[in-house]
Image (cartoon, rainbow, N blue to C red; front, side):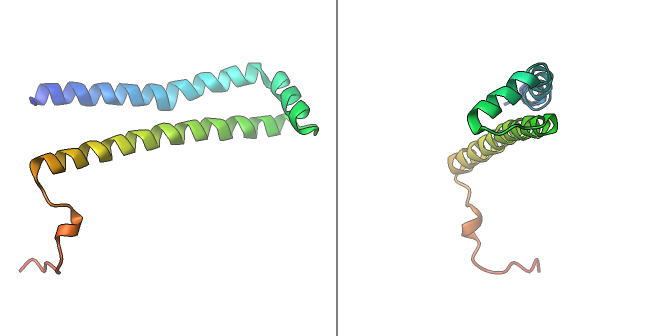
Length: 105
């Protein structure tokens, strides 16, 4: 892989992560604000309890953070699996290969 291709791949991954970790939750937040009354009504119908508007904000934040966490875990997991595949392809040892203390002497 050339350095130019690596830079373009890194830039595209950065753009995708900014969109999925920043832009999508922002759009969701604005959409939720427009739907606050109907969300309060839906929660009231499901649970039978009246909720305050601040509780709706807490639910919105919990859903948004859950989404961001899932996207972040997918990104970290993808990096792990790609690097593990690369390590095996190159025939390198994993961390279990070192069995004694390496003092650096």
